[in-house]
Image (cartoon, rainbow over all chains, first blue to last red; front, side, top):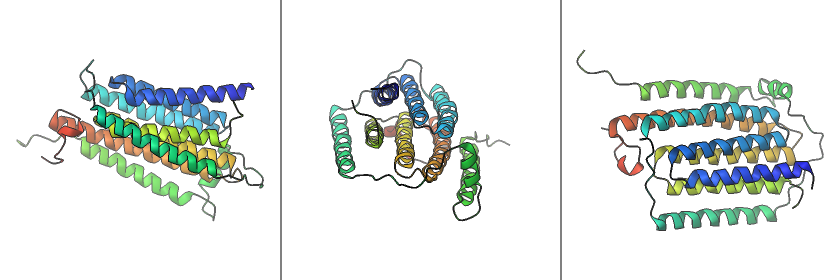
Length: 172
Length: 104
């Protein structure tokens, strides 16, 4: 039992505990804060696996972007201090049953399969390697998906503005 | 306690995925349902990175898939929140039971 193992189990407990609290708490603002802790725990797990760039992207986009957006939309749409309505126990029971059966099925399948690690030499996931391969137009490059994602982000941005735009009064 | 490896990370990500599924089934508020979807997408990212580290460390494909999933999740969250705010303006509620009609 060394330090790395202890850190892994602490991160796992943080992720699963705050994830479970995030979907069961009845105060919506607390749900957002627990979601924040889950995302930070996942970023910590990326750091633990030594994928520093992905961890940084996770913190910047999820923790700094999406959670802040969710918190602002909670402020805009919820009354302060109001609890979420209690759900029917049968619905909760069947949802828990479905989730548990799915988890059991998935873990049984995963535990039966043996993953064999490739023997080829490892590529370091440094920023230089990632950037060089992402903008590569040759066979192993990801330049085309990169451009497609940029078009998607542009379309999403324009779509958000059009949807959320307050419609003008008709008296003009 | 064993040395953590691929199976441990797969267990975390599968559990997180089904926690998200449970939240998506039980919640009836659009913002909390969006949070559940974020949990599901994050567990998928964890899977991609774990496979990239423990099965194919010679390639970077998992990293690129993760980056694209994060970008698309950001676009999805922004669009969903724009729709939620617009729905709140017209219905004064973001409960899915009250949002039966999508046009007015």
